[in-house]
Length: 293
Image (cartoon, rainbow, N blue to C red; front, side, top):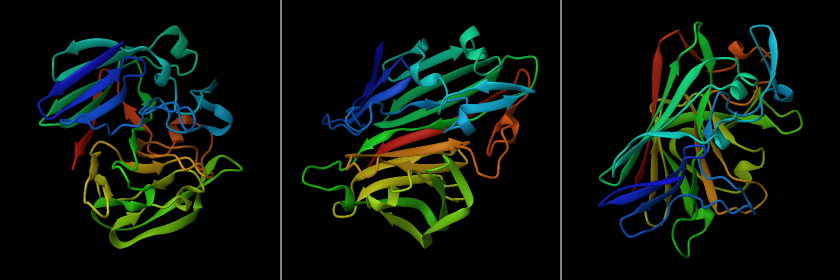
């Protein structure tokens, strides 16, 4: 089921399958979300839960039992229930099932609320522990944005502009062993808030920053100053991805609590980097915003 929310300055369309954002337009009807061309990538904004990225050999250990769980978890293909809706907002929700417990043993309620106001799109993720024990989980967003966004522009006309000046490196993803290697880092920012986009930037898959001060980043056309701003106050890290060497016309901004397996990690789920912990009866919310600039 597709749900549209709108105000006078913009609109968004969300698919109940995966609670996935499939369209975000300004008041002129200009589209900013990648439109799922399977030639490059057949998704556009999956919700990542209860893992982000991959576990080692797609397996993890929870309370002594081994579970098989695919990259990014199971939410991408689940049909969420709409629990609240108006012209400008909608909430999608899922709960654990027998099928999810075969993959991930905890009881939970996961909701994602979209609100559009003055053209800005806000997303609130909420995880509630409905189990009788403490639960652990990872959570991530994966929205893909058209890039270039303007007719006649190219991918390399754009840059990432962070909220603050940063001195930061990214952890390299080892494509042979399918893991992030904390001992292999590449300097990206030196007292700067701007990172120019190139195709070669993504030759080792996602560019993953695990220690930024900024909680906002914009994809900006260097020539026009136009683009889109993504705020991620609820997330501890952020990654950026586009397929390489394919010259795909999009870029993903991926706020994460968690990531693919580190070379230094064991297979215990509770030891995953940035894993979230939630006691019985508690809930926690995470925010994400998108604003056209």
